[in-house]
Image 1 (cartoon, rainbow, N blue to C red):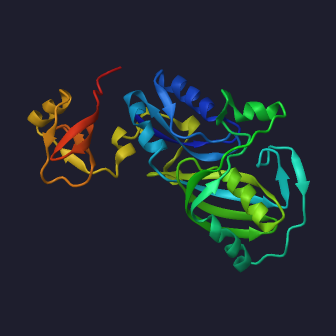
Image 2: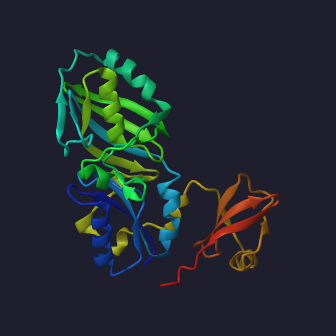
Image 3: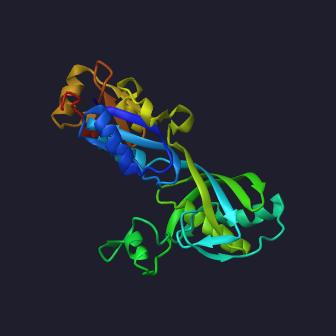
Length: 286
């Protein structure tokens, strides 16, 4: 069984919990997920089964994520979300949509973001959240992230609901915290729902308890935006042997190659006038 599942993760489960459940339901050991969601968060969790796990990186690292984020202004917590200990409470200024837009504008595009202490990042061999739970706080370097879209969905003081489209490595908790700081009243992330991971949309997601093999998506959904090349049997055999091909009409720097029967065979990278296999797949493997 090879392919992807688009799971609507329920609250209270870790991403690892979801993977473990799918592993049991599918009776398959080789299962992984593409992009962690916090236990309290809900929404799209992309799960790969079988050899499709070799394609996880193209979902996790090279696709945008979209979120519906409810930010609670006026209260800061040690975890930057609703599960944390309240650190401070401040009055929320009177704000209209225009004032909020002015504050949000600097957070759009390429920005620098400091990760939260309660995160899975490492510091001297330990995860930050492990240090945080022992009362230790360390300096975290700001990292570049991309906020492709940041739109106001609703403003019902003190709750600000945002539609966020962002790139790899973005922490929505940090975004909520920083918006609160910019407004001068502090804030934390009250709730989070991931509405899309690349082509995987929450409207198409299934509940975990509804899993069946019929919900499995083809492996190539992970690279659906790559140009597709249909190979004849001779070309397919060259790729299986790790040899390069000439594809004179193919543009771009990467492509997905399909066998004569239509199944995904390999991912290709351009080398001059030739294309070499990056990864070759044998879907008959257990």
